[in-house]
Length: 242
Image 1 (cartoon, rainbow, N blue to C red):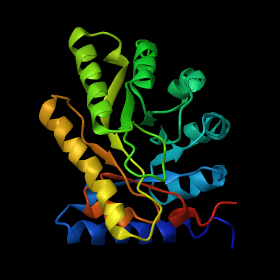
Image 2: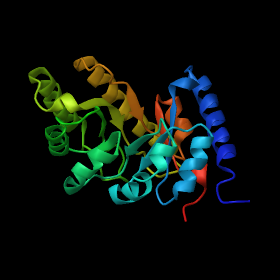
Image 3: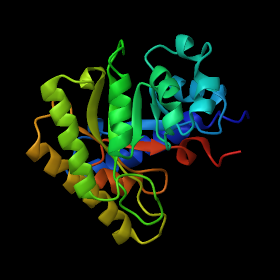
Image 4: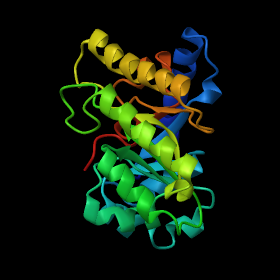
């Protein structure tokens, strides 16, 4: 048996657990997307997930994504969408914008402004997610809701003034729950993000602002119950990383 022969079977298990969690919370399972995290895995991992129906992929580092996805892979696999889910350094913005279809780790107003200022020449809108820090385990993301809402106000103003934001599309929020067996703490993290999401939708008119990217291999069922529209799955699809 080759390394990725179990990929389709594992994806089916993830899909089944998503469906069960969605039904428990009165949601449509089709409202939840699976993003396959291919960090530290080769092209074969991408191709195996694609063959099983996955079209959304995520990478943590620009350099690894560039090496893996810049060759024949994307032309061989039509319809795939690649997202940056790790911390984005300011000196990697240009490369990231050329390579990724979405950036989920926009963690500060400064980073948002830098991306928007470089996006005017984009031939297709770059999908952006603002990351909120909701757990002590993770230090990345906007530190609190006040900072998050300030960034939203700046983005909304740039849209009104048609300055810089034409090449980007702010589509949602992202977070990482704490790595703990305490389900209450995990749910609290996801609920905090959802409350921020609902408040933003109440305050601002943002067409297409519909995504809640939350939930990973250890907690994605809980995330679905709490309203996630996208789960980022690595280990549950590919097994332990090499």
